[in-house]
Amino acid sequence: MATGFFWDERTFWHAGGNYAGTLPLGGLVQPLAAGGLPESAETKRRFKNLMDVTGLSAALSMQSAPAASREELLRVHPRSYLDAFKAASDGGGGELGHHAPFTRDGYEIAALSAGLATQAVRAVLSGELDNAYSLSRPPGHHCEPDKPMGFCLLANIAIAVEAALAEGRATRVVILDWDVHHGNGSEAAFYDRDDVLTISLHQEGNYPLQTGKLADRGAGKGCGFNLNLPLPAGMGHEGYLHAIDTVVIPKITAFKPDLVIVACGYDCAAPDPLGSMLAMAKTFGAMTARIKQTAEALCGGKLVVVHEGGYSETYVPFCGHAVMVALSGSDIHAPDPMEAALTARQPNPRVLAFQKELIDDMAKTAGV
Image 1 (cartoon, rainbow, N blue to C red):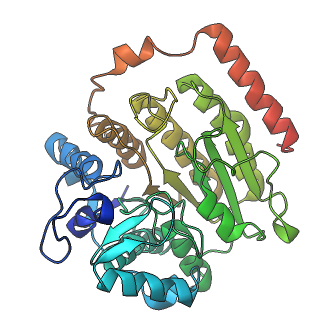
Image 2 (image 1 turned 90 degrees about the vertical axis):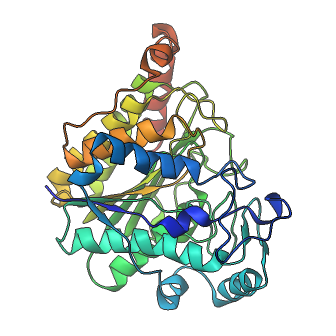
Image 3 (image 1 turned 120 degrees about the vertical axis):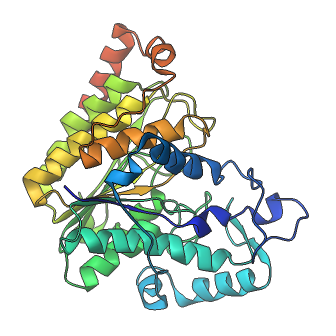
């Protein structure tokens, strides 16, 4: 089993621009750890460091990749946006959307982040790797073609998918997003398409406020190929697995993809400051194991996981480690230091029964 892990130190140097204080950033000035935004380098750096310390990194194919090319970016983003982004980046940074600031070199770092995801997909579809993880930063699942938002500057996954389709490596792709926030960017990129199935499990009414409704199912020939599951606050381990087992896997199975991509946000973990869910490290491991098994049954195991949100610097590393253990089949585990405390906070049987009933009702409405 060959599992790839795509990362690059340069992506850890992305910073929050006008949120980061007066220090001139960019070039060879490494940002401070906090970076001015909840979306900081530390969650990602500590994730990789934990794998180094446990020895899991040595069992993976650790790689970098070239930045996404202009041609690859243009398949998703209009020239006008890319030109404005590049000009602002060269001029010292700025903010072109909603909560998506950047400093000098922001354009180049974002293109590298997209390149990591694109190369991870390419390596899996070519057979070089069985599956892969892309530690992409800045994240991408909120970035719409012409509108950056929510810390996202380029649509990393959409760029990777369009490259795979254009190169003839795939014809049908699933994007499964379990970030706590709605994957509005991926939805916008493929809303009227029937060759890409987009599924988003997210906390209802979190971010963005006006998107991610169950009734939003696609348009034109894409009708029925977009599925939103707006989950109530407090959804825990068993609730997430129920959604995966009863809604997500049947939907993916019916679609028969050539490739499955997971937009993997860790902000539905209980300790996360930007979510109100109760997922645990083992939740992410279990969801990954289930999706991996589904991909093995449908498309030769072609599965790529791309990093999105997650803002607890101490807990994201354990969630990510659990995902990598499931992807690689390794027996190198990092025991969750908060498992006992978080288990005690899980929904009681009565609340869990309500959650499962709600998910079942959404599945019926969506025709699953």
